[in-house]
Length: 351
Image (cartoon, rainbow, N blue to C red):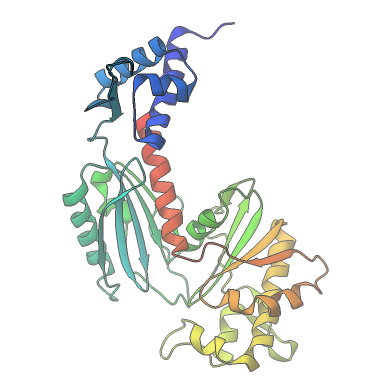
């Protein structure tokens, strides 16, 4: 059965929009060449998209004349297609960016993550971005806390080093259209593995976390707590079973008055590295037994520094697995959040 004319037009219009997203401005002749359609078909698609307010004539023209052919008009995506909001809530502070459909950052705001003021600071940066880059059509939020997959609210677990407090990001961003909330480790895994199908991402920093990616999808579990490894039993000093998070207290590697792990002190204490690597190896063995990843990626502020010690331990495990350091090291969480925000904004425009 041949596809309907409406379907053919819809597919053509999507291809034209995607071409303009990546090339920014094109004439109808250039669109025809880029998409692989005839010039009349490209012209009709531009007409339809212009009528719908998705494409606009930029007012720019090709040189043309005197043997150079006809003058061509440059078309681009309409300027009022809106933006996507990318927000990261972390111990280091709250950062928000607005990205346009081309992936450019058009506005940025930040606030300190002061305990007790996180929710207020989050609302402030969201309002600042909204005033500078409206309309915001989709918002993607990362939080350094577990996230309830049903409600999008933050979940508080014992010994969490960074308690945001009661916060419902969707309620704060009620005017943003779509609101997607997930924890920081899952976003870092997305940034690391956009082309990977099956892997585990261990975040070893001030806090401890793990993202499980299977068949290209992050797995969250019934309530969104898949990968919360802090209380996983592993091997401690002297071969004793110990909760993973408690090991760092026993070794004196926590920040004063907090359950947060002191990464600089850990890296500067080589005598503690074998015990930490052994505990990490026990966590990896459990992850491999349950999730069967193709490889394990180590990220976070101190994890990659111990990669050789960790490999030495995992190499002796009953089910060895490839272990490597994360390759995305510059703002991996924001990279993952920004990428998802851009993908969803483009999907809204095309849809």
